[in-house]
Length: 205
Image (cartoon, rainbow, N blue to C red; front, side, top):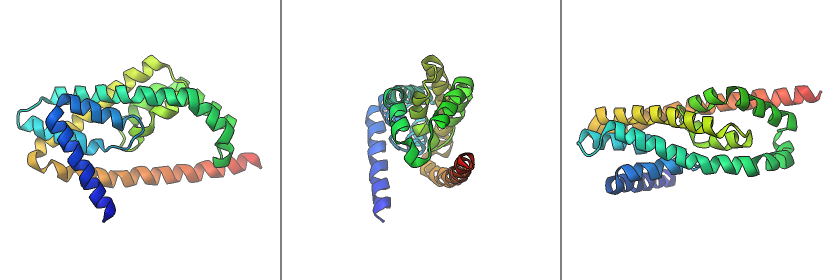
């Protein structure tokens, strides 16, 4: 019950920001969401889409504002990972089964496949909120990081905004579908953790 009240209060705050600030509010909220703070874009963009259906904003405008916000919020998270993430991971990673070899492997992945990793991550609920930090830890090329963050985020914001525009006053009904998709992300994460732990102990033996 407490969680439901908290989410309701959060949703009310989000709606108030967008209603009063319009495009600037979307930039602000999506920047927060991309700075490793789990502010639900599944509320932000569908409501903005609803305002598009009322003629208060345009679909392209809200998608652009959302993408700009994502880039703005991702840059600080990237630099936190770049300057603080690797030393902390090397010092304390062993306590969560992260070795220097694992960090080197992540560096290689982001160096060779960073564009597609960032692009896909920006299209996934939950994952998109935190992807900037590991990109910074791996010191992915900043220009590529910004470009693919913008492109992936624009598509994400456009799709959510379009869905909100089409559902109109019932835009909040979209939340349950994205909530169900979160379970898919969590299940995939659990599978990855199990695989990672098994791989770690096999390599030690």
